[in-house]
Structure formats: structure tokens, C-alpha cells
Amino acid sequence: MKYICTAILLFTFAGFFPLASADEDEFPFALQINGRQASMFLYRYNLGLLGSMAKGSTPYDAQIATEAAHNLLSVANMKNSTMWPAGSDIDAPGLANRTEAKANIWANFEDMGNKHQALTENLTKMSLVAGDGVEAIRANIGSVAKACKACHEQYRLEDED
Amino acid sequence: MLKRASGITTFIVVLGVLAFYFLTTPVSFDSGKLPRYAPDPANGELLFWVGGCASCHASSTSKLLLGGGKALATVYGTFYSPNISTDPQFGIGGWSMSDFANAMLNGVSPLGEHYYPAFPYSYYRNMYIEDVMDLKAFLDTLPPSSNKTKLNEPGVPYSFKRGIGLWKQRYSAPSSIQARPSELSPLQRGQYLVDGPGHCGACHTPRDEFGGAKSASYLAGARSLEIDPDSPDARAEWNPNITPHADGLARWSERDIAYFFEMGFKPDFDTVGGSMVEVQENLAHLPTADLQAISNYLKSLPAIQY
Image 1 (spheres, one colour):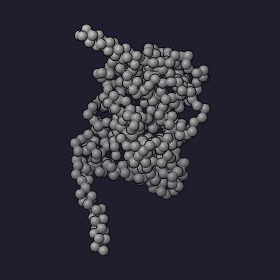
Image 2 (cartoon, chains in turn cyan, brown; image 1 turned 120 degrees about the vertical axis):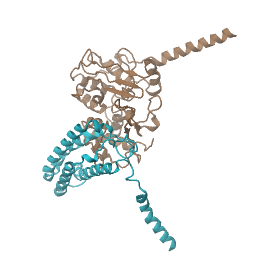
Image 3 (cartoon, chains in turn green, blue; image 1 turned 30 degrees about the horizontal axis):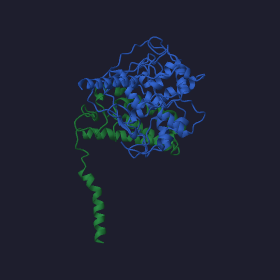
Image 4 (cartoon, one colour; image 1 turned 90 degrees about the vertical axis):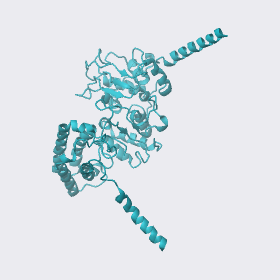
């Protein structure tokens, strides 16, 4: 019994220790970097709902598709400029494994804004048609992907996970 | 005694020079070796997208205007992609079919000089001759560009071009002409596309100190050799492991891989980024069966880690 209790205790606390000792916020610009990564996660999550229907790995559901498309548009409409402070790029001290944002973003901020605008327009179209059927998603998801890629091609460093 | 020693030394030097001369002499096919074949530009277009010719040779305005001039800054020097448009003066409009086959399969120019392996002929040499001929037939349909490209700026000692012959001896033995089989299984087709025209290993296989592929780590991932001229100290891209290893495609199904090529979405619906964006968008021109064949082959590779 004693051993079982010890085992349970160890097991339980083992789960907490990494959290307790995590240095998740102990790096430069942690708040802003975590913030922008959270918005990327929301894109990915909602694109996953739509995309898996387009891909054919989950059945089409008009309500889920509509919600996901609206969520994507909402994320795109958030004003996140404070999450992109200069000096929070992958080559900045202490950020090598914390961000994938390339330093060239800050020399091309206007271009990144234009690319974001294109994404917003594509997501607006998607939000209007996502409830119309899987073919409507298939017809529009390519241009959404292209808008995401436009930024990832130039401004994100592909690095080891 | 001294006379004898100097005689031996002279003999060794002469032998060395002769060996170097023969080992580094560019080897070309003669034009009589090409099959009698009416090339098919439609298949050539497919190979154009598989090979991603546009990624290096296209102008910024159109993927089909192949004026070249893109700088490839690497640890071996800066190489400028040549003009491969149909312009007879600045491009390759004046090339014969055997000139083109020699460039693609042997890495030898019409003047009989070695090309730098920045041009990935060590992969293209796996191509079937009919496919090479089809590719030229497609390139012949594209517009001319009068863009005059810069000369390469290789670092020392790579500026000594003849030395590339030694590199070829080690990493890219002269090609023999391979005829296209009438039928291939999906796995064989995938292998052909990946190992030949697709030259996936050029980025995804680590290189040794001479820039040759480390074949034991084929497709196991590599740091890019490209340098950003605007910020030379910036971290270079990581080209991921694309074998079925846990660090690579272990959790990707064949469908995931094919869908990635088609749309640019990874299984978690993150998108492709960096230089792979162009590659993915080129591959999206392929028929589904070919994308499936590539996926089939990648999943069949040994799961290795570099």
C-alpha cells in the first residue's frame, strides 16, 4: 500500500514539476511571442476543422464549418501589432528556440501588413460560403493556404522542431 | 642516387598530372547515342514542375520566363543561375538535344566544361533519356529572355573548375543513357521522381565537407547551405528529415504527404514555409497519382536520423 501511495504521489507530482519549473515565460519578449503563437494556434485549430473536411478525413458539418470560418476571420481581425516588437526575432539573443520569426519582418512591416490584408479578404470569402457545402470549402481553402504561405515563405524560418 | 630519386619524383609528378588530367576530363555523350524518339512537350512540362526549374531559373515576373540570374549564395561561393530560355544568344535556344542531355545527365556544357554541382545533375543523371528530351521539347515552347546573367563567384579552391571532375568521380559518376521503361509500379515511379528529376536530396540530404551527399543519411534532413546576403550571420533554414523516422514523416500518412504537396498544409494544418513553398507549389501541378507515388516511396524509405 505504501509503495502504491508513493507511486501515485510521484506520478502526480511528476506531472506538476515540469510546469512548476518551466521557464515558459523567462525569455525576452515572452509575453508577446506567446501571444502571437497563440493566435497562430487558433488559425491552425480552426483551419484543421475546415481542412479536414476538405481533405475528406472528417465528414462535412455545415455548423462546425461556419463556426470555424468565422473564428478564423475573428483571429485575422484582431489587432495584434503589440505582439510584434522589434528585436523579437529568431536571431535575437535568447530566442533561437523560442520563435521562428525572421528579422526581415521588421524591415518589411508594410508588406507583411498587405499580406495579412489578403489573408483577411480570403477568410471573409470563406466565412460567407463555408456553410454551403464541402465543395465551397475546397474551392476557397487553396487561396487561404496561399495567403498563409505568402508570409511563411518570407518571414518564418523553417527550423528543427 | 640523387639523380635516381629526382627521376622517380618526376615520374610520380607526371603520373599524377596525367591521372588528374584523365580523371577530370569532362565526359560527354556523342549525339549518335540519343534514341530516335519524338519528344512529348506535355510530359516535359510535368518534369519541369517536378524539377522545379523555375525556382532557380525563372524571372520574378513569370515562372515560364527562364532568364535566370538568381543568386545562390552558399558556403562554396555565389552562383548565378544561368539563362535557360530559348534566346539563342543569352539562353540555350541554340542548343542541340545532345547539348541539353549532356548538361542534364553529365553536368557538361556544350563547350565541354564542367558545371558546378549547384546545378543538381548528380540527381538528374538518374533521369530517363526520353524524359530529358521531353523536358527540352517543353523548354523550347517557352519565351526567350535577353537577360545576361552574372558570372559565378566560386570561393577558393572551387574556382579551379577542372577540379569538379574529381568531385564527379566521387559523387556523380558519368551517366549511362537509360531508356524509359514502358511501365513502373507506383513505388518505382515515386523513387524515380524523388531520386531523379525531383532532386529532393539536394536539400534534404546532409552534405560532407566537399558538398557531396552523405548517402548513408539520404533524405534524413540537413541545414541549408544558403546564406542570406543581407544578413550573413542569420540562422539558415533546416530542411527536415523526410524519411519515416520520428523526427520526419513517422506521423504523416501517405494521404497527408500527398495533400501537403497539393495544398501546402501539414497534418496539423500549419502551412509549408520558407523555400519549400515554391517546391510545393511546383509539385501541386502534378497529377494525384504522381503525388501518391512520391508519398508511397517516402514512406517506404528506411527510417533514419542524421
